[in-house]
Length: 111
Image (cartoon, rainbow, N blue to C red; front, side, top):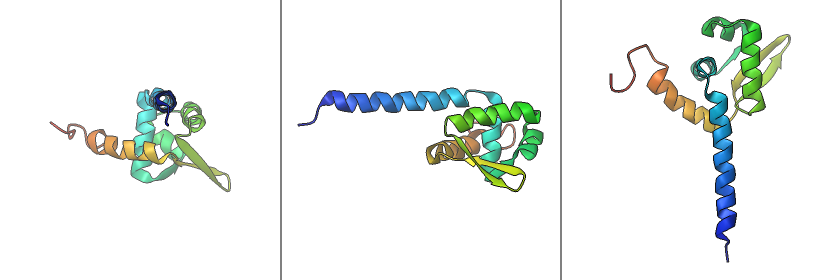
């Protein structure tokens, strides 16, 4: 016999996980970073910093927060570190957000 509280516990854990991800995403610059990663697949710090108008230091802080949450992952190629979206669920979410909001200004659905 299944226990409804066990299902509720799992549901609460999932809600907590989603809330943590959404908190990590609740920043305009992090949203811009992820839009660029959806567009490009992966990018290095220099390219991302130029694209979103941040210093490399500020960008690195945002990337570290998202890496800690499992949102982005890295790979090293010689001296360069490349970033990409790591969590496929975040990738799906951002593909949708990209289509709705990361296109040309004024091109959002309903405009």
